[in-house]
Image (cartoon, rainbow, N blue to C red; front, side, top):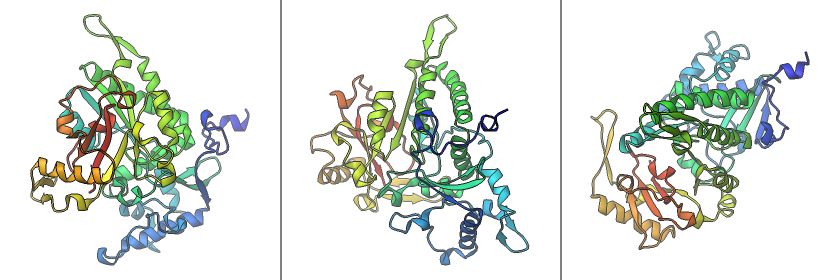
Length: 406
């Protein structure tokens, strides 16, 4: 047997991304010594008391070598710490490799925004998937080497505000580990990733569509299209799901094509036109690098914009006795709407006469068949900082989604 053919999970770093190659990935190779050193720096940071702990180095203004590493959880690092030296060694790190290259329990989850969407719109069921934001460590099983890869190649100012670089995404052992397992699976064995993702979604689709719902699939609730290979897998899965047909109890044919929709966020202009061609609803982030923003026709593209805190400063109060904590507005929705409207008009996102809705209002309006970029109805939507849904992201009639910073 040809050894190369036998290694079906060999990473093709130089290959054509349209054929499951990864030549378009921004990456840097690191030795096991460099990797262990990076982990030990994180371990040392965790070992300090909270008030003496420096901020995790991830911001764009720092030198590249200081944010080559994703953030791992303290308990995951503790598991591979040698009790004799209180450090991670070349030997103990092998357990870490096994952890991040294991098969992820699931590719798709029902995150907080998905849950709120499903509660608000009874006609849909939303699931989401993601990979580590900004940076990920991939272990090439064939070459036995570590690679630091850029998972958000178009990221600009959004690095500072990124929801996936704080809180649950980086502090939960299970979530953090799962994101790294997913990206390692994509790179080491894209065919296995495709099969697992497809069959997960197929099972969910049969359950939800049988109840008369549409399945909305959100890609990149963390991370971005770090490679065309990853994007093409998402497109292929969507198209294959849409080919499925079944029958209801009365023998009436049900076409999955009428009920399956993929959407996502990106900071890379190349994927905007690709997505329109491939039937993926894509939201472009205004937190991208300026040269990426310059390539996008803003008037014809769904946009997501972060509303800075100063626009709605002291608007929400935190009710700590609630579990989980609830953030309640201290002013009327109309007052808040006008504050956001003034900022959006001043920033030249919308004109004074354009409609600005909350998601709770949008869900009561039937979605038009023609997308706004083809002359259909156009809305802009405010997404509240806590407990809101993702409805505006998959609607074709929404131009701007204004995400309130938190």
